[in-house]
Length: 128
Image 1 (spheres, helix red, strand yellow):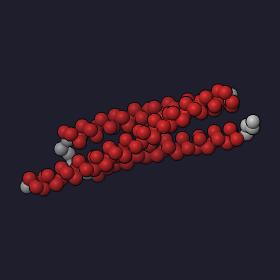
Image 2 (cartoon, rainbow, N blue to C red; image 1 turned 60 degrees about the vertical axis):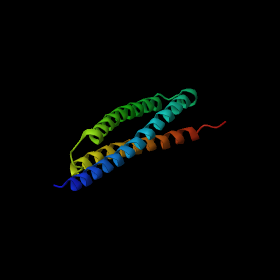
Image 3 (cartoon, rainbow, N blue to C red; image 1 turned 45 degrees about the vertical axis):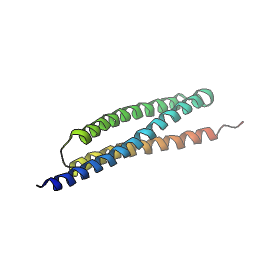
Image 4 (tube, rainbow, N blue to C red; image 1 turned 135 degrees about the vertical axis):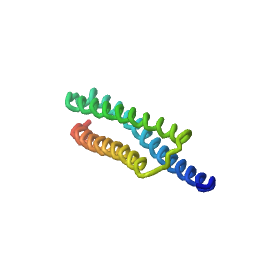
């Protein structure tokens, strides 16, 4: 393989990893926002709703979010290492791994949005 061909493969590999890294950072940022929102929901639950079931759901979602974020931070380190030092081609197995991470994030996002909708329905019952 010529050095030009190898260079093109390396550039492609780095571009794909950079794309994955950028997408991953947007997921992590969204998850940090989820945590902030959960803090607000927790305060509202304690001051207004006072329902242990809602409180438990908030804690369960927070735990799931923290574990998922830890998993994604580990993946972030793997991507950084692969970007800097890796030589493996960006192939189907690497794409499949990223798609699995996306599926985990999307599921968390769906669960979180479902919880938010339920929470807002509960809050709507309260009047001034």
